[in-house]
Image (cartoon, rainbow, N blue to C red; front, side):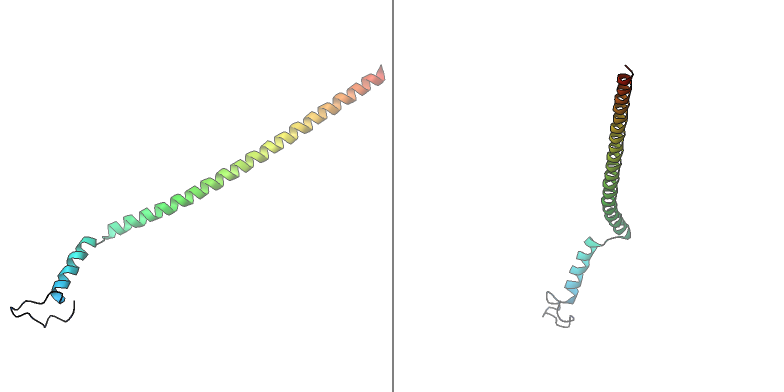
Length: 104
C-alpha cells in the first residue's frame, strides 16, 4: 500500500489500498502458498528421484554398451579361434594327403 494509514476517510475508515487492507490481502495470499517443511522435503525427494533415474538410465546404457562390446569381443575371438582351428585341420588334412600320396 501507500502511506502508513494516517490518512482516514471522513467516516474514519482507511482508504482502499492503504496498509491494513493490503496487509490483510498479503496475509490471505500467503496462507494459500505456505510450503511446509514436509512438502519441501517431498519436492526435493522428487527432484532427486528424477536426477537419480537419469543417472540410473546412464549407468544402464553404459552397462549395456560394455556388455555389447564384451559380447562382440568374445564373438570375434570365437570366430578367430574357429577359423584358426579350421585352418589347422585343413593344413593337417593336406599334409596327411601329401604323405599318403608320397607313400603310394
